[in-house]
Amino acid sequence: MILTENARLRLRTMCRDDLEELYALLSDAEVMRWLEPPYTRAQAETFLERAGLSEPPLVYAAENAAGEFLGYAIYHDYDECSRELGWVLRPAFWHKGYADEMTDLLTALAWQEGKDAVIECVPEQTVSAHIARRHGFSCKGSANGLDIYRRHATE
Image 1 (cartoon, rainbow, N blue to C red):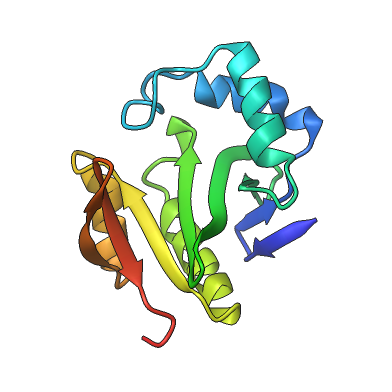
Image 2 (cartoon, helix red, strand yellow; image 1 turned 45 degrees about the vertical axis):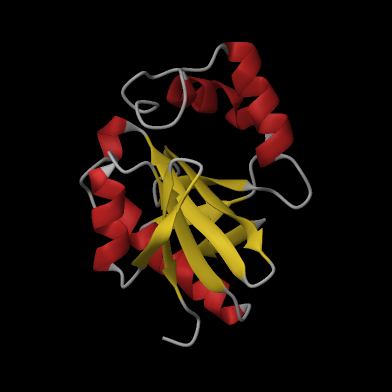
């Protein structure tokens, strides 16, 4: 199932065939720098089961128009009135506009649902914070060591 897409990018439900690409992503120390320690294959498989194949999914596979696995999009309930969104991309696809496009697509989807959009990141993750601010999100404080950026559906 396709969650949302544009001409360059498709966000779709994950499948078991995504495991190898997902493991390569989650085991990359550079990718995981601001998230968690790199995953083992078993941890990646558990993540796929619990987050990608859950109902509803918490994350969605991101692929380009050629069908290449870019990484994944975070999109799920944050609280009663908000959806959390985010992205984790392979380094080969950093600085190519995909995070910006995912932010636009997922913010629009949250708003269609009548919900605010929220992005969380550690304070040191300056690139994600910059993307959030560039897309009109405002820092609303922090919780559990994460800065919380919000954009209201009414904006």
